[in-house]
Image 1 (spheres, one colour):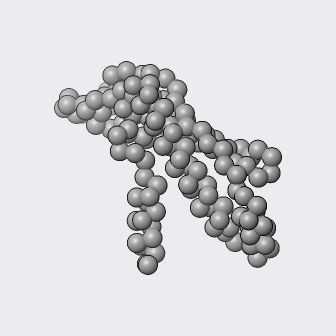
Image 2 (cartoon, one colour):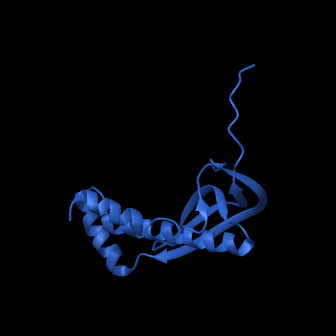
Image 3 (cartoon, helix red, strand yellow):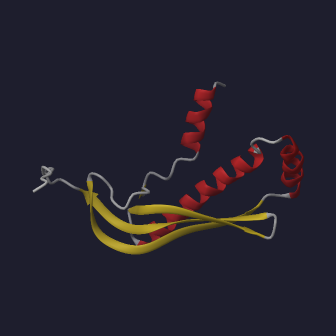
Amino acid sequence: MTARSSISESASLYSPPSDVLVVTTPYLPGYRVTKVIGNTFGLIVRSRGLGQNIWAFFRSWGGGEIKVYTNLLAQVRHQAIERLCEHAKGLGANAVLSLGFDTSEIGSVMTEVLAFGTAVVVEPDTASPQPVSLR
């Protein structure tokens, strides 16, 4: 497996669901917000497990990236986005604007990841673009 195929596989593995548009910006180019529903979130708490903690402890002696934790956090962030999308759909939204993350540690073996944003209803914007004027 090449580095390029590894990147494309992990990108598709962790891509957000396609039935809800999710962006980090407060707007969605090409769409018009027709209804702001409000806050939406996806929360997950995950334990690293004894085996992973022991492996990471010994790996930390040598320095560098601890891939066990990197992979765990990538999976958890993806699951938080999936839960965020489920919550947004349950509220009647088809998009989430201003996606953000918050993380914290519970005890010394659990990690909490919260994905949050604004649930909205959008529709394609069919209006022709207006020229920008500085006057």
